Image (cartoon, rainbow, N blue to C red; front, side, top):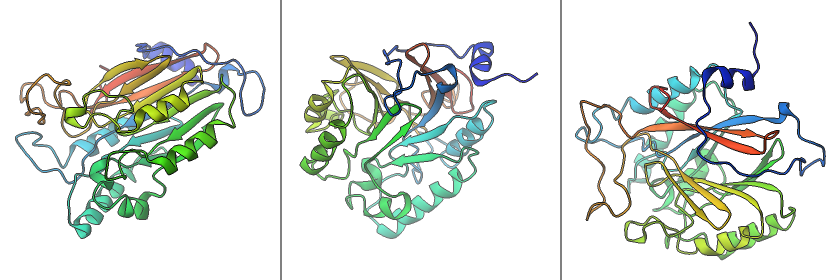
Length: 300
């Protein structure tokens, strides 16, 4: 029996709504009414840290990303695209090793069935060379794209050595937003949170408030980010912010312990705290739906 994506999601029960964002009923790119066929979903994967090697934290450090790739490939309906929200590789101050790790990551994700895969850097990828090697492998560190009436903005808040977006990129962002109506549907991808989640742990962007101020006039803005290696949800005004789990090791809740360190491996609950997510844009019903998955594709 042939079923479409929307019917499959209904039958599979993938409807754990984490947040609802009001979307306008017109495609801002064409002015046409949005139909059910404009619904789509993407996968967010984050903080894969290829090159990390600490068996006490993750004894399967060389296999976790591969398992996640297999799990995404095994989805009965493939996403429209995949977004990797930074820290593709684990930090190294050796430029040659950084390229080796980028190559290793790229070789693994080549096995993904989805052909549209987008990338942004994390501070582990770009913090020591201002994104130079990342650009060699994956292109621009900030950019925009449009998909089925949603305007996606990828912000780089890691290449600047002072943990800022920077005036040049903020000017670029402001110019991009000026082209949109205030009810345009906007999704922003960043690595670090734009708001001050926990500055003592570097869980903030020094000039993130300036980006939020630029986004504030728009009524349908959602931000997806990584960096903190756990699911987290917050709002700044009408802007929703959603952090994703990582795919190498989990981190403790903000401020829950004196020192931020990876949570040790629990043999009784392997891969606990690790995973990826689906984000479905329900254009006809004017909402997004998040579904969380473990490393092996189990729905959480």
